Structures are given as structure tokens and as C-alpha cells.
Amino acid sequence: MNVFFRLVVTGAALAAAVGTAAPAAASVTYDPKTMKGYAAAGDVRKAFKWSEATLNQRAPKLVFNHDFWTDDNYTVTCGKRVFPTSHHREFGRFELRHAVVKDKQRGAPKGYGGKLLGVWITGPSMGISGTSMGPAVGQPCADGEPGTTTAVKLLSTKVGWALSVTSGNDYRQLVIG
View 1 (cartoon, one colour):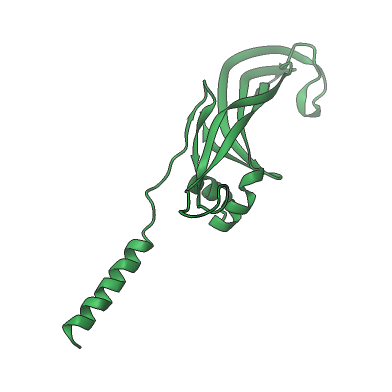
View 2 (cartoon, helix red, strand yellow):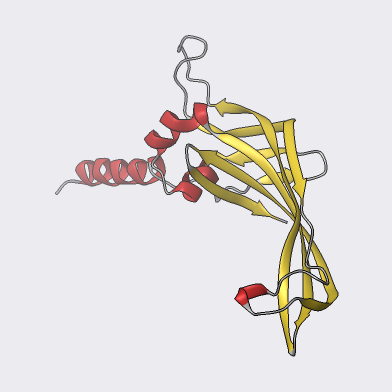
């Protein structure tokens, strides 16, 4: 085998390896106070276990949300039985405005072509929230036990939020705080 042929084969192998190198791991950046951030295409694909082609097809219909909740933990006394219970007291969701970011392909007409890079999340557009009453003295006992609740003690409250994305009926959390 001559030297020139070996160099051509080695150069072609090196070019192929560089051309298929995986990008650095992407991460979602999101500020829950401003409800703004960026979700890289790779993170959305990974969340749904989609191919690049599937993400490109479904990207226009993605819905990003800021979910929030407050969970209270209690001990409840019912007769002689004392048991722990959690109550999802407050909950809600803000639908977030967003814009798909594509890599511009040289020479492609405006709005066409380009690889989907990610999604800019630009803030809330609308929201909905609700609240419900926790356990209280005098309520029927849980789990069909006879009698009424005789004591309730609040032990802790935990507040949380998540950045989520929905495609049709499929819901995924990208960041949980």
C-alpha cells in the first residue's frame, strides 16, 4: 500500500469522525421568577425519547408550562388511629410564550430549512390556579374507617415548581425546583 493511499484513507476516517462528533451535553436554563429561559433541542428530544426528525415535526405544537404547587403534610387522628397524610393544597400553571430557534442554512429562503437548536422561553402568557381545603376536624375518616376526624396537626409545608413541556397528551418535566 503506498503512502498517498494511506494518507487519503486516514484523512477520510478523521473527517468522518469529526463530522459525527456529538455536541456537548446541553442543559435547560430557566429562571422561575421571570419564567424565562432556554431549552436545547437535545433536552426536549431526550425528555420525549424522540429522534431529531420527530422533534422537528412536533416542535410547532409544543406547549411549555411553569407548574407550581404547595403540599401540606399532616397527622390526622381518627378514632384511636393516627396516620400521616399529604394534601396538595395549592396548584396552578402558567402557559409560557416561546420561540423555536433554528440554525440558519445558507441560501435557504427565510423561514425554511435549518436545524432546530432549541426553544427560547420568553415569559408567561396566561395562567390558572386553584386551592383546596386540607383535612379538618369533623370530616369523615379516610379509607372508609367509621367515625370522624378528631384531630389534625400540620407538620410541614413544601412549595415546588417545574418547567414542563407537553406534546399532545404527552407531558414531561424538564426542570423541577
